[in-house]
Structure formats: structure tokens, C-alpha cells
Image (cartoon, rainbow, N blue to C red):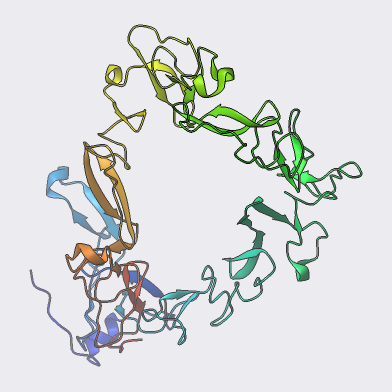
Length: 419
């Protein structure tokens, strides 16, 4: 039965209006088409108020025909009507920062490192030159020390050992002998801190802050700085797979190159030698002379680059790629064939599934233009033209923002305007 509309100001409307305090404005982020379970739904565009007379008996209920006539939800007809209008004012902690490219209300002051707690408050401006990285946590900047890739001396690991924020992370614990590996760990007098450890391991020596093996290092043969050169009387025709260098802490010696070894031990015969004749990637000399793989095994590298005898790749459905076994069905760097890598574009995550490269949009992003070249170009969490999904528009004319993938709605008074 269609209920009659009661004109505002009529006696029936006044007698039916429930006595209630002035409603407070509340914000709701609702997607278009969301269903509100209300006794009466009043559009903000309709400048009318509709009220019902409360019949005698129990409260009105909505009946689900598939539930055997049982009441699904009881609704109190005397409850105030909830009226919603498109909102335009940013609810805290969201705002629009003029110097930050984003949609209306697209900045969250609680977690944006460029606008932390307020527009223009950057957590990164303080950390320049201090070996620190800044992040925004609950509207306040938080700082952590960083790892620097460094140069030829290896990575640099910084720590704040004096607990003074103003000078940042002032100590590199990979190379500081007073704070080696961790704050306060001192090396013995005259001992360097190399890679976070005091001194070098057994068999190696410290040459200008780098641990080397003086038995085989061509630039530090026997002692630091003793670089080997091609000796006088060098072979006109070099034995196969050999080079002159440091061997047994002596320069000018023939030595093997790459994965080859002198398994018959005749390098000492010099130019008359047959060189380094054995390839240690062979299953009969796997990783060393005379190391034989068992039947069904092959000589291959593991993921860490170590050579050894392992079950044949085909035994578990994998394929040998570059000396190691790879699953062409799931390996993102060898997808469907050796060497074929899967690449992701902007805001995409790539993967290999069943031997085919597939890409998925990162959470909160979507490919709305169907153009693979620019990846997932739309932030559906804040784009009012694509709010929550491609093509889902908020009220653009009213300036309704998209917040966390939902168009902003606010509670308003009967007959109220957009808030």
C-alpha cells in the first residue's frame, strides 16, 4: 500500500512529529547503491517530510518471504529518521593539502610522511644527511636508522649510539672499532672492525680494511700490496684454462680459471702441462676432482650458488636454467621458459602462474583505462570518479569526495542541503 505524503506544516505532520533533540551532523562514507534499512528513506533532493502513524501492537517488522514468515528485523517507528546527504567537508583525519597532488580529502594526516599531523609537515625534511628514514605514525614523525649500500668496502649499517636525535644515526657499526657490530662493542687496540666483526677470520689478513687470503690474492700475495705480474719467460702458448697469478703465496704461478681444476696435478710442469683439464660442473667431478654424483643425480648449483650433486631437475618437474633447477610454472624470473622474467608496471604486482606471466593491481588501485602500458593508474580509494571501483562516481557537481573507496555521506536535517 502506498503511503500518502503529508505536507510540511500540516496538523497531521505536527501531531505525528516525534519530540526529539536537534540531530547532530555525522559523517558516513557510503558507496552509491548501499541499502539503508530504514522505516522511511527520504532523499535529500525531496523537500518533503513523511511520517507514519504508529499502529497498536508490536513494532513494525520487515518479513523475509524465504524465512517462513519470521521477522528479520524489528524497527521502532518512533525512532528519528536518519537522513543522509552527500558530504563535501573532509572528516578528520582526512584533508586536502594544496601543495600535495591528490584528490579532495585525499590526504590522511595520520600516516602521510609528507603531511604528518598537518599539511606540509614532512618527516623526510629532518633526516637529510643524518642516515635516517622518516615515517608518519598516528600523526607524528617516527625515525629509523638506515642501511647504506656503501662502496667497495661493503654496506654501511648505521646506529644511534649516543641517543641524540639531532645528529641522527652517527655510527657505522660495520666499520667503527669502538662500536663494532653493535653500540659499545670495542675491538682490541690496533684491530679494525670489518663487516661488523673485529679483525679477520683465520687464514685471512687485514689489508686496508679488507680481509684477503694471501695465499691466492693476486693483489696481496703473501703480504698486503704485493701485486703479481706476468713473469719473465711466460709460456707463449698458455696451457688450457690457466692464468699466471698468486698460488701458495707465490707470484708467477700457473693457476686454474673458473670452474676448472688440475685434477691430474701436472701444472707444476709449467708450459708442458695439459692445464686445468677438468670441468668441475661435470657429474663425475662435481664441485671437485673425483666427486661423482649418484644415478639419477646431476651436478647443479643451488639458490645460494653452491655447486653439488642433486636430484635431477626432471625428477620433481623442474628444468635446468643456468645450472640450477627452476620451476617454469611458478618462477617469476623463468616463467614458461628459461630467462623469461615477469615485469610489473605502475602499482602492479607480477607473478608466474601455470607458466604464464600475470599481473594484479596493488590493493587500492585499478586499471580503469584498459591500457597495460601505464599499469594500474587509478587510486580507487580517493578518486571520486572511480570510487571503490572503475566508473563508480560520487556527486562530482556537489564536490563529494571519495574516502577509503566510499563516497562521503553526512547526516543532515530534513530538507537539508549538502553538508
